[in-house]
Image 1: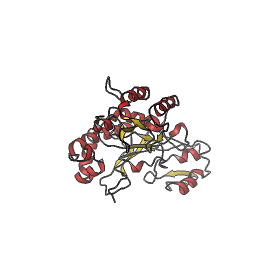
Image 2 (image 1 turned 180 degrees about the vertical axis):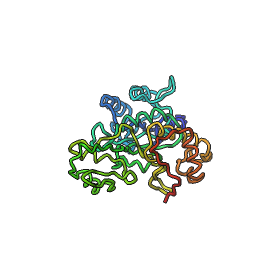
Image 3 (image 1 turned 120 degrees about the vertical axis):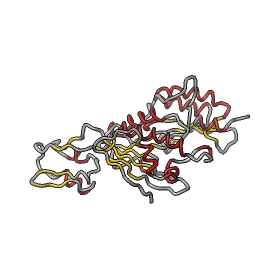
Image 4 (image 1 turned 135 degrees about the vertical axis):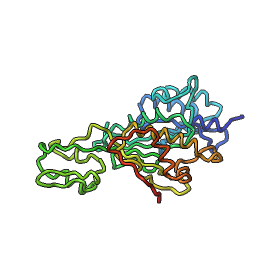
Length: 316
């Protein structure tokens, strides 16, 4: 059997330990899957595999022990999932058109969680639509609040939901619930003065917990959606590190534009001799310097007035 493994891997299949066997990685943007697709995965696993499915760390599914010569048949079965999640795909192409950019992950968001500021699954799907397909190795994660349940700082781009809490002093009964909670669970951004609450914008991390703790709705979330964008977190063999804050109080449009600009940056500066043509962005930033990355990333980006961009970042 003559198999081009580079084409196979680009099509989201994996080269495994067993000769002639492969595994398919299924994208689930935002980690939210309609249960009707379970039947398709079950059919693939039982008909072509060994009857098992592995849940990946990136909220996708991997079906192992598939015969490589069955890939065309498996791709046809995968089409309803790809089409159902509106994943970008070239016309008349079957299966996934690329495997470089990883599945965009997300916490469960405000569809379920009372702490989440936004619908993280919807944003993950929107980012997926904008940046996929691509052969470049990029990891993006979205979390609804600074609790960061998705561990966004371990990714190339970490997106953390923020809100600028709005205070109506006439509804406030000076119960101190928000102040006490902020002191114990957040950053001590709230203080009580003359029976009214003051918020220190510099200390505030936009977690929105004051909104949830207020019994009279004196605190509400801002109409504008804001986020914190962290960059260049990574695991791996060489110099693993936590991502650092890049921009606070940024909007969705700017985030997507910055990620797309980063693909242009990768195209310009990637190590052409990198194994399999892949190099983590963080290593490229280390090589070119933060200011060059920032120049490319912020090209034609219109940031909100509140946005705060780091002048310098020094990774530890």
